[in-house]
Length: 266
Ligand code: LIP
Image 1 (tube, rainbow, N blue to C red):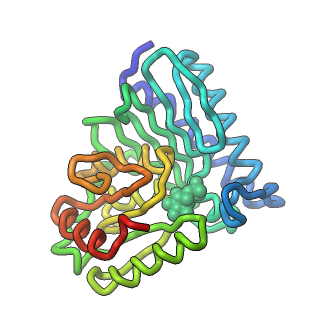
Image 2: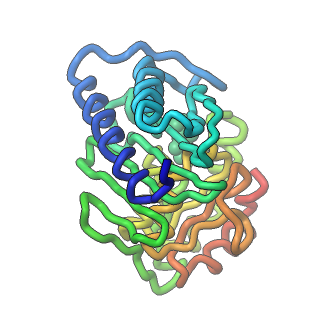
Image 3: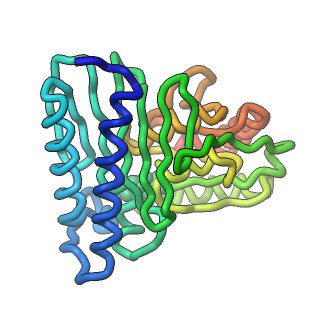
């Protein structure tokens, strides 16, 4: 089957929107059953599990030879060369608390390169999309990252891990950084953080400890919106080790501030 990026997005977008709408509707009833994973604060709900199973079923019904990797355990081998990276609910803690900023994040990779991406954030009423070389959009409108004058004038988002000791070290980095930038924001979902770099709501985002499904879709959307999205070094891809997204005007300056503050050592 074709691995045309537009066709892959045309498949994924309505699936993400359908699941996001279901998640929003679920907030009006009795909350989902909630359990935890790596630590007591690393939450997972029955809807995380349902969403991943539903997304997997819908994708494989259309493209049975594709591979799928998901946060909640989906691990389907494929032969088509297309691998889907799925975070069925990115920002699960936000979802459990009814805080805007949880989202459905789906990315399609061909030979290891993300070529199509959708992030649907239901309480914001926003669907971010991108294809490789095709630009980035929010609800169908083209988006571009900001152009801050300097890191000192930049509002920067970040996130924290679930391990309390690591989270404490990460907060100590924030204390060393916050006086060198305009301000910090913590929204609770990497995919939304990356999309908000893409549309210019924040001037940068960094985090350590992300999984591929956290950043795969948002990274393409931010890159297609003109942001530089890397790991620790220029030209590298985001990784568990380090993820930094920022407009080219401030990427190097912000990266240096973060490295000097020990952001890569937590
Ligand atoms: C979340 C990430 C976020 C991070 C949270 C959490 P999850 O993913 O998207 O950036 O700061 O601690 O890891 O667990 O909600 O899918």
